[in-house]
Amino acid sequence: MHLQEILGMVEEKPTSTHMFEERKSQVQKTIQKNRTCVMQITPSSPRRPMPKLDVLRRRNVVGEFIRGWGELERVVHVVRKGKVQLEEAGGRQRGRTR
Image (tube, rainbow, N blue to C red):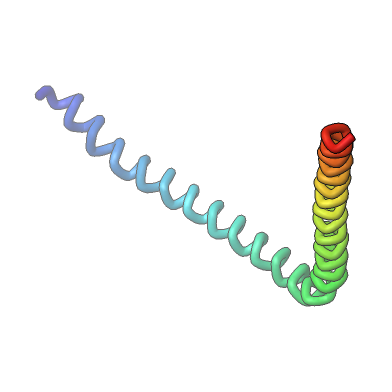
């Protein structure tokens, strides 16, 4: 290696260390800023989820109603279909006895 290359490497080390320290201080400032924002938001947050939970509970009740209604419609359909089949079977039996 030449003398200039070695000198360049020696000068590069403090420069990169300085850049690292600047970046580290910027990140620490950002983290502190974010912490203050979180601390401002935190006191109001316990009040907010309760109405949302109530809405979700209501949606669940509505969902159960919709599922129950769908099941009722399927049962009614099966009963009607069975009634029609019984009537058709009864008509065939009447035809045989006459």
